Structure formats: C-alpha cells, structure tokens
Length: 416
Image (tube, rainbow, N blue to C red):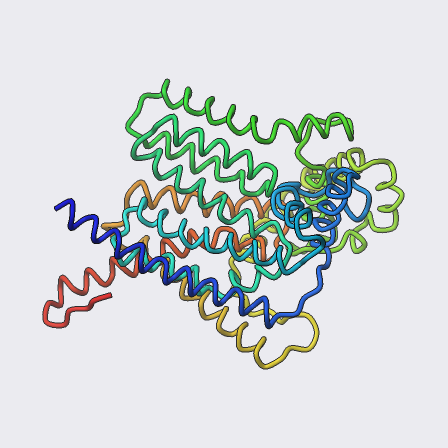
C-alpha cells in the first residue's frame, strides 16, 4: 500500500513538472513577444531598487521614502540589479520563477482543500495557462510576489483549520510579515486565518496563543522596516500611500476605478501638499476622504457596491493604443478563461459534497480581499492575486461534477 501510494505521488509530481514546464513556456513566450517599457508604479519600484543598490537608500522616482510597498523592489528587483545590473530580462525571469512556484502552490492548496488527484493537477494547470498570469511576468509589479505569498497564507489557513500547529503558525506569521511589506491588501486574508482557527479542533485559549505567535512572527519580518520608517520619515508605518489611495477612492470625483489625483478636487493643490512631506500629505488626504465618507454615507455605500462590481467585471475592456490581432485574440481568450473560472468556482456553492470548512475558508478569503478594494478603488491587475484561489475552487467543482456524472451515468464513464 505504501509502495502504491509512493508511486502515485511520483506520478503526480511528474505531471506537475510537465504543467510547470507548460507555464514556463507560456511566460517566456510572453516575455519574448510583449515589448513593454516600465511605467507608473514600475518606475517607482525600479527606482527604489536602483537607489538601494547604489547606496542611496530606498527612494522612489518622486523622492518618496515609503510611498510604495517595499517588498517587491527589496526582495526581487534589488538582488537582480545588484548581481546583473539594470537588466529587466533577469527581473522578468525571476517573475517567471515566481509563477512556477505559484503553480506548485495551487496544487498544494487544492490538495489541502480536499481535491483528489485530478483536481489538484487541474488547479495547477489552470494557473499555468491563465493568460494574465503569463503576461504579468513582463511587468515589474508587486503582484508577481504577492500571489505566491497569498497562496502560502491560504495553504496555512486550510492546514490550521484541520491540524493547528506551532510550525504552520510561524510560517503563516512570516508570510503575513512579507505581505505587510509587499501588498497591504493581502493582509485582508487575516480574516480567513481567524476563521480557520475558529473552525479548528482546538481550544479558544490555544487559538489565542497561536494568534499571538503568528503576530510575533509577522513583526519579526516587517518590524525592521517600521523602525526604519520611524527614523527616516518620523512615523512607524508600513507605507504612506494609505491616505492617498483612500482619497482617490472616496472624493467628489471618485468613480470606483482608478482616477488620477489631478482629476480630483485636490488636483490643483496636490504638488504643494506633497512638498509638505509624504506622511503629512497622506494624513491630510485620509482625513479629507473620511470627511467625505461621513458627509455622503449613501453615496459611499453605492460607490462601494460599484467597486465590488467593477472588481469582478469580466475583462472586456480595451487596451491602450492600437492593438494587434494577437493582442485582441489574447484579450478574447482572457475574457473566456475568466468567465469559465468564475462560473466554475461559483459552482462549488451548488455541490453539497463541497460544502465544508475548507470551502468556507476559500470563499471567505475571496470575499475579504474583494471588500478591501471596495474601500479604495479598483484596477484590474489588483484582482490577479486572488484568481489562483478561484482556480482552485473551479478545479474542485469540475472534479466533483465529473465524479457525479461518473456515479450516476455508469455507462458513460468520464475520466480525467
């Protein structure tokens, strides 16, 4: 029996290696065919990494010391630039490696969620061929690092719900520390981990003890950056974009999607405000956003619902500038993939055998991550980090559906 199980595991990892290889090929193809020059946030991350490597400290292209999340430029771009110079290809290849790690994590998360062999491999395959996952390795964006970290947290949550342990708790805390540095929105997964501990077969006192241990592990990772910010900008915070982003999503000109600050009431005075210091500017924008929310509660609620709708709106939008036939085809295929994924994931709610605590944790993670963006604003790439979870649930639904067909239609057996 053990030999048989070992042989099955070997076959699984062989197939998983093939799937990872497919993912690599698609991502390398995207790098080779998609010619893109860094812009917007990418320039900030690039500047932060180059300044650090040059010995000037972490400073972005606008001269800010903590406006953007430090994780991606610190852990990915800076080492790449230090060893290989300002080589964008190397950075993109590292993004590709992160994509390979994510494919493997999809397999592991699906396994922890209760998927069988076909479901686990299908979850990995879905992420391997999901087109945005390939295209985004070209961008120097924090999402490339956020995605595997968030999947790691989801895996920890599923494991804690089944078998709480100090080791998994510490790993989860470390991952949260990395998320705090890389992408604040990912911290919304705290709710999924809390739910996992509540559902776990352990006492409340042990849940509290594990929560404290997790917090300490997280602070060990992000604490030095918070101390650095206290010394450099005079405030013990992770970054100074919270008030800025809150204002962009909650002001008289807010639409729910990203709008430039130049298009808001603060536009004419933004440059003068920015010169007062990034901490003070962020605090003022935060207060203005809160005032608008308090004085326009109905408009705020409606706008939040619109943001939720935008967050899950099918990607039918047009790209920038003139599009080639290949880009148009990719966008059509992306929209088709997205619709199939979302519909399949929603199918988990209709399958009785999948209504368990693992599925509750997965959906809670999706809902929490969506809710965070309902407070701020929506950009389509912000949705990408939660899509692997949708892929895992889609795989669970498809596998269960095939098993049901196989059970009730024995004369027409379906095999994956």
